[in-house]
Image (cartoon, rainbow over all chains, first blue to last red; front, side):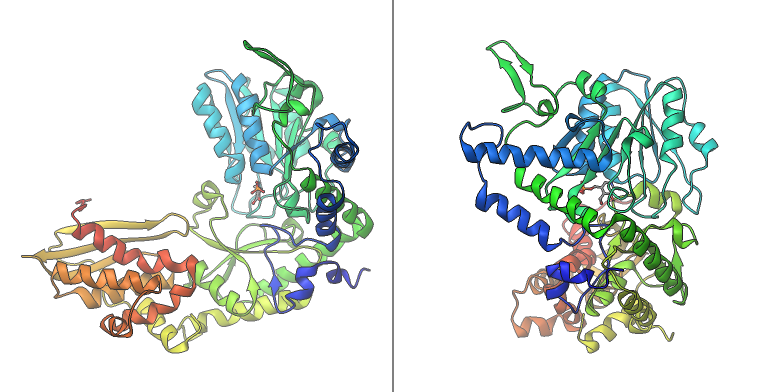
Amino acid sequence: MNTNIRADFPLLRERSGIAYLDSAATAQKPECVIRAEADFYREHNANPLRGLYEISQEATDAYESARAKTAAFLNAESAEEIIFTRNATESMNLLAYSQGSLLRPGDEIVISIAEHHSNFLPWQMAAERSGAVIRFAECGADGSIPEERFRAQISDRTRIVAMTQVSNVLGREYPIRRFAEIAHEAGALFVCDGAQSVPHLKVDVRELDVDFLAFSGHKMGGPMGIGVLYGKKKLLEKMPPFLRGGEMIEYVTREGATWAELPHKFEAGTVNAAGAVGLAAAIDYYQRTGFDWMIRREEELSRCAMEALRSVPHLKLIGSDRAEEHHGIFTFTLEGVHPHDIAEILSADGICVRAGHHCAQPLMQHLGVRSTVRASLMFYNTEEEIGRLAESLRSVRRRMGYAE
Amino acid sequence: MQNSFYREIINDHNLRPMHKKEIEGANAEKRGVNPSCGDDITLKLRVKDGVIEDGGFTGDGCAISQASADIMLDMIIGKTEQEAERLSEIFRRMITGKVSDAEIGELEEAGALIDVSHMPARVKCAVLGWHTLDAIVQGENTEA
Ligand SMILES: Cc1ncc(COP(=O)(O)O)c(C=O)c1O
């Protein structure tokens, strides 16, 4: 048991009055990540992959070893399969522009209704450009997508299936391994949005057998501005570049150019080396602290939150009524009070939650809710914080002028 | 909204709005939406010879958006469009923190929303009703 985990997080130490329950938006950063990023700039700063002098070589080594560490963390076959981007959103756009340019009129893209706009709008764009069609696999009221419902959207015209592993609204995990298998049987590629899963589950890209997977470093304690696109090497090799410019070429003439080898073909311009180093420090932190322990702790906290929220009158939880199907994400409404008013009252009590549509408007429309509140947990949260949340929620209706 | 006196005014207009209703003979109508937070109102007015004879709103949203629209209607019914526009201009300046005490006095209960000037995320909610009013008065009137 790791009792003093909060001591590792400067913000949690220094703003001790705050209950931070918005880790699904971005996680707090451990000291080691903040230091690793700063140390890169203090001690090794030079433009990686360019200079032939010593510190440039050090910068290159730091950047490339972050790539190797990320590859090992996801169990990718090789480091070339890891492309650094700014975030999951950029990873999805890279794919939708590049892989999307290979689509033809009449091709089909299947996504789930639960997608974050980041894994929806890029595909909507790819469909508009190519004349492909988007089909939606819909979820039930508990958020689940039964296999038959998924399969019903797949046909011999399906080229790409893009789905999130864990929903940022429902917290539910989808059976990605099985869905990828079904997609592959139909001859389609499978793109997985790992933004909410990579920080909270052990994600093994070879075990899932997904073709691509995107995530953001900042949701697992890494810095903002560093994200990852994993892709199978043989697929990445066939894809055209996304952005063009420095450091992604092999040879350039007045008439044309040939592209650098993977992964540099997809990393045009000066990269976020310090961010990558920070992400590597976050991965080290997970391994040092123990991913198994983190997962168990988040399960405990989820059970505690489920019980606490159930005790709040007039509260309606979205999605499953089983704690283990929430992965620390609890989205709800409180009868008669608009979510923004709830978030404002919680904020007055020092509790940080998210209110709104959570960048998943098609899902909200499908579930018939306009706007909701989301509390999300990470291993560094405490039962005491969850207690404060429930306490504050119990007072909201009274503070909004209701008799009870 | 920490000040409990202001909170009460807003709660009261949110829970028991006087003007959240259809009105008879409306001849001007406009929908106002804040896409990011989902506040969505439709404002209807009956205007004769430049005077706002009656008005009402429908829709839903957070307490601030609903209370602000209700308070606005309290203030503008019976006034000329010109006078309503003048109040709207003062209200917007209050929300951005640039008004005198005398002007706040003129805003009557709408002055209860002054705290919003410290809450950037709620500014759009507070001005939604006024913004919709401006759209009507400034002639973008759509008979939807
Ligand atoms: C499921 C999911 N996908 C994608 C994203 C986008 O992440 P980012 O904003 O870091 O690109 C998020 C973040 O909220 C998410 O929850």
